[in-house]
Image 1 (cartoon, helix red, strand yellow):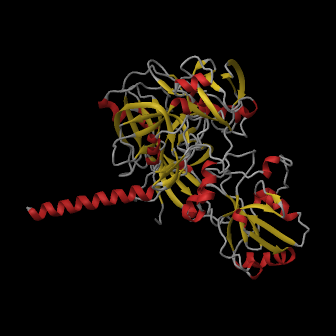
Image 2 (cartoon, rainbow, N blue to C red):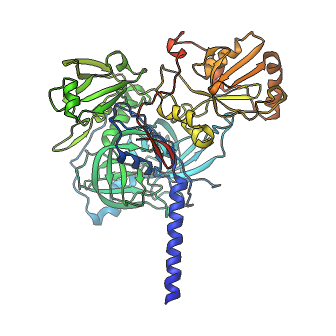
Image 3 (cartoon, one colour):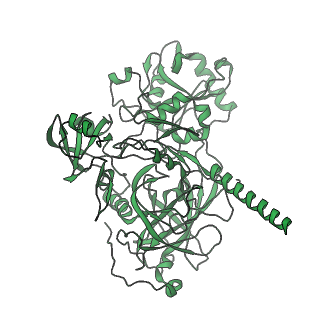
Length: 611
């Protein structure tokens, strides 16, 4: 008996150890958001690092799925960090390692769930992914496959999670009870809201199909049923629970803060993209992520139908997805009476504008020191919250997320003790360091073996933060873009050759100037190099490092270097287009940029985090 107990205990310990290792290895640094329009950070926000996108499922247990993430909006001092633990469920398997909301349906009896028609609208998604290699930007990584869930919404379209079809090269879907897979096409992908729209052209696939009806936002304690194809089997899976909480939530994949529904029903890898139903058989949202921590259990998240409808309406309006807008300001709570008195705010309301993002339209309307007391005539509380349904309050940025790109918001402010209303155009935020690369492949430029590329979050993750350097990492986490199109261009590595002797050890350093001209972005650098007639090419880096190349020798050596390293082109295809300078001689470029924090700094066990 003693031996049996000892063996059981050792097995239990080994299991715990395995689970912990998996959680750690699956974590990815998803700096979540530069909290524009956010209030000052709260220690509780550090828990954001435990969000995980529910990985698309597969039969093989994987322990190192990574999904980028970040977001921004008129928030309450959020910061930029979601050190990742947010796994999105759409199971990933790497072989090597204006819609109607209808609520008139009758409740579905538990005994009839097996034959419920709405289950047949849920399909399994098979995706082959080929992600870019950010360290070697001229090539891609080895492909891998994953599975997830999706559901029919009518008009020949399906909904799933964006992370389920990220970097897709092929997407196939299979209906319940069928053994035929049909090719699907990705029509739109919303990274910030983690939703993707698919279409299937085959008429056979849609035979006798009944699309799901989108329901209303549920109430607390309402029953919820999650349906999908998670890890553990090939057939459809159903789990039940209740609505635990509804509030603005951090989205791990897009690193954004949008309305989310917290539930206690089990959500596992592969559930990503699957629908969540109420008792009437209506879809109330899309399963997409879970919260992993030793201190909590059974915390899953569903994208509500309000966010889904916003995504679909945006696509219908523009024939493409444009994104959720933001106000573009950093805010501070006004709980302190002395602070309110100093700002001549008579009532216990409003939030203080600490900073306005240079690239936002609010930059021409709002000023530091303004107090925002209303948005579209909805009063904003001193903690940055607004009324939400009955006896509830929600983050002020929720109102902004209801708008579309290009919409105008009426902001009530107090400036110098005088109340006034101003009109602000709302647009998606401009990221200095992007969380995702548009078009899929990163830009790069190779000059005599010196490889230049823009800094991005995927590159930081791939290179590991230790090799990036604290100063560059701080710029990535805390700097605001001064103009649209600005990038932090770095020397990623040096491909050794006689022409660049002495520079071989240089890597991951920001290049500031070329021949005395400050660099705006990598396209600007390529233009400067192409138009250079000087004898030397002079690159100036951080910490006063300088690299000098003889122009004619560098040009002559380029083809040899490309051949030796098997590189097809000296530059990415986007840099072949003519350079158009939209910014002129912006005086701001002559200032030291990229070192001004947009949020309070916190140091965690895994490095710099946004609060």
